[in-house]
Amino acid sequence: MDLQHLRYQLKSGHYYLYDMRETPNAVTGTRRFKLRTDHVAIAFDMHTGEVHQHGNPLRIHSWAMTMCRRLRLAGLWDKADDLIVISGPLPVDEINKCLWIRGYCRRMFQRLATLPHGKLQAASERASDRSYDRYDRYRQKAAA
Image 1 (spheres, rainbow, N blue to C red):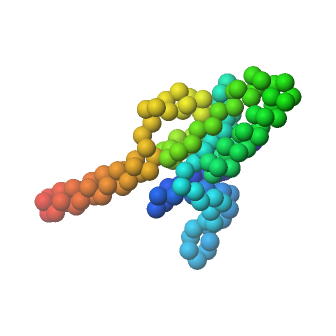
Image 2: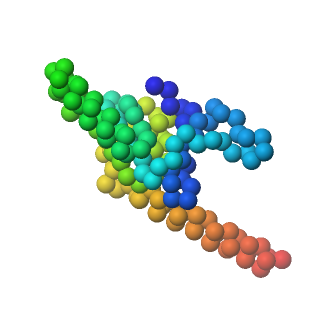
């Protein structure tokens, strides 16, 4: 599954999924979003790190439960146990790396407990950017 063209962005506390192959609107300069959700879930294989599904947590958990049931009915117990779903307010850059880099989900899963809260991280980055901008303007005024 080629996910290189997909990108999540965090805006106003919601995750938006964009297809970067689409051209932006000529008037507004923005792309139409494919998905808007409060939290993101990613279903992946524990051994390979391959992403199977991503998106709204309710849909992804439902898909994973159905897939595990089908795999177990087919006698593939190990495959069913390897299917992992992570969900919540994950950092946007980590979500995008999972989509772009094959096997990255497995590495992220190992560091999951140490990852920052995705929505709080974005707010703190914006705040630090604003404070740096103020400091930079102050330095420029002082130098003049």
